[in-house]
Every structure is written in C-alpha cells, then in structure tokens.
Image (tube, rainbow over all chains, first blue to last red; front, side, top):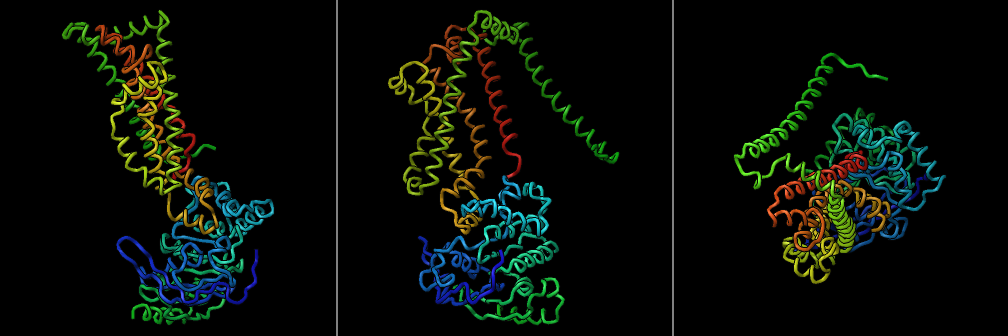
Length: 256
Length: 267
C-alpha cells in the first residue's frame, strides 16, 4: 500500500467556482492556484465560511470548476474520483455494518473486493490496533475509536490522496489530540498524500508540512507556508518553541 | 460468567423490576375494571343489554360462531384480504418511493398528485371500485391497497430523502454510482422508516379491509359488523370488533418483533 513521494500530484490552476441558485449567484472561489506534492501533508485554513470544504469537493471531482483547471497527475480531477479517500467531520461509519465490513466498503464500491485486497485492508486495521474490534458495530465503540477506524476505511482502497474535512472537530479536546496523533501516524506510516481542511490553526501546524491560507469568500490563496517540522509527531510539535511563533503568524494573517 | 453488582445497583434493579410489574398489573386491572363495569351495567340493566351488549354475551357469541364453524370463515376472509392489501401496498409503495428518489424530475411532477391522493377520502371511490372489481374480495383488497399505498409512498420517500448527505458525499468520493449509493446506503439507512411505515400500514390495512367490507361484501368481520348493526344484534357487532382488536394487535406485535430482530444497531 506504500506510495513513493513524487512531484505535484494535485494541481489547482486559476480555479473559479460560482454557485447558482434562484436567489442569485455566489462567487465561492476565485483564481485559486496551488499544488500538493506527492507524499506531503497539506493543510488549508481560512476564515469561517470561506469555502474550505468547497476546495475539497473540487479536488475530489464532486464539483466542477466554473473556470480554471484541476488536475490529478495531469488528468482532470473528475475522471479520477476513485483515487481519493474522504474523511469527514463525523466518522460516518455505517452503523449497520461491523467495523470489518465498514473497512471493506471502499473495496466493494471499487469492485476490488478480492481476497488479496481484503487481507491487505484487514492487515492495516490490525496494524493500527483495530484487530480486536473488527466484529464490533460502530455503536459499540467510543467516539475516539470510531474516528481511528475511519482513516483505515479510507485507506482500504489504497487512495492516492486523502481529503480530510475537519475530521477531528466532533471530538472532545483530549480525544482530539490523541486521535490526531494516531491518524497522523497512520497517514505518515502509509506514506500517503493528505489535504486537510481545518478551522483550527493549532491542528494545521501540528499536522501539516505546508499550510495554504485562504482569504474570505471568494476564497483565493493568501499564502502558502512551509512549516518545517519534518516528520515530528503532532503532540511533539506542540511542545516545539516554533509552534507558538507559527500560530501567531497565521492568526495575524487570518485576521487581517 | 455472572456479573457481580453493588447492593445499591441490585436495589435499583429490584425497584425497576417492581415498577414494571406494577405497570403490567395496572394495565390488566384497568381492562378488568372496564369489562367488570360493562358487565355490571348490562346485568343490572342500568342500560338495556340489547343496546350495549356485555362481555359475557360477546364471549357467548364468539362461542356460537366457533360452534357453527363460521368464525374461521369470517376471520379467514378478512385476514386474507387485509394481508393481501397490506403486502401489495407496502411493496408497491416502497418501489414507487424508490423510483421517486431516483428521479427528481418524476418526483417534482408527481408531488401534487400524491398530496391530493393522500387527502382524498378513499371511501368516496367505493361505487367506482364496485363497478370496476365487483362485490367480491378483489374490491376489498383494492380498497385496502388504496388506503395504504400513498401513506407507504410518502413515508418511505421521506426516509430515502433523509439519507445523511455526508455519507452520500463519502460514497461519491469513493467513486460510487447512483445504484451503489442506493443499495449500500439509502436502503439500509431507511430501514427504521420501513418498519415505521409497516406499523402505520398495519392500521391502514385494517381500515381499508373493513371499509371495503362495509361497501361490498358477502363475508368477513366487516360484513358481520354491518349485518349485526342492520338486524340489531349488538352482540355480533361487539364480538366482531373484539376479534378485530385482537387481530390488529397481533399483526402490530409481529411488526414490533421484526423490528427487534432486524434493527439491532441505531441508525
């Protein structure tokens, strides 16, 4: 399931998106250009309601840009939906399926539910501590444990890029720090490319290699910062003296 | 392995058990009180038993129907009509709801017609149904279907449309097509709505079949009620109503049993 880090894997080039409703039209994204390198963890932060989730939907091909280009390895994003793995605010595990069945869901969808793929997905679950819980239903697990199962499910179909839409925001603070650390370990361990959307500056600094700062709506790129913590784990980063410096800088940028 | 609890928890469990027994005893006592008062009113002729009948007279009438062999004939007739109408209404209603979920265009076109059909008192179609299907069981089954199907469609469509949007996004991001979203997500997540719809349709099916038998029938519990009313045999009316209560409760209980078997984890 490993993937070697390479050059830009996802490219936004002059992207513009306008929503049309009976009430009128809303310009959500304007001239947005950025790229995500293979194997890196990129975070997107921005003011509330600026269109962060819209950026993920555009990347996954769930929304088509009104103008501009979005490319995955040079191909239009809409043609490569199966190469993305999505993680949302809630764990969104299917309550009528056991953890094992939930983890195998992406394989069923991709019609790749072969014995070999199943074994690989279940090995991944065991590797990250879910081995004893495979026969459990989601309502039998704690919120933190469910949120640990969600990335395993996302990784089961071996996606190229993980799209994380505020995946820890529904958890209490303590659980959040712990799950954040574990999920980072899983994504790094599997050498995956990740694009995280969050409203939490600390979370972005503790997870990302680079941070894209978006403006108020219509969203456009204000800055891209190289954080430079390397593969330091999220909890360790919070203890680093550079952490509050970055926080201060990003806080000011968001509140300009 | 038996769990060991604190004495405080054991006392709590004992209180809960005692409360449950009290509630059950109160229910039985209430029924006994109603039956007792009813029997007394008739026995003391406070009201003419010819008009109000009495529990003992109802029991005697059921005994007579049993003895002359007509009990199972009438119960069987109504039960068959009700179950057939229920099955058709539930199946067709769910399939129509699925089709309407699938096609937003069809949903928008048909919405006003569904609302009007839901508001229409189905009994108004009685004469039309008799002309179309005659005075036999087909008319009654059709009436039963008519009473239940719109409710089934509306209830199930509401359930399908209430599917968690985040989960749909998740499946779409995995590359799922519409049929996969339907099979893997929409149908399983609407199971509680399906059970809820079954519960409503149990009541609707009995309303439909008895209403149908009022309009046109030669047998069945509805027929006995109408006949009993016409010849002033209130014992027969009450006995048939009592049997209806038992059958409807039994069918509802079966749905509750199915719910407990099928839905083990909260949606």
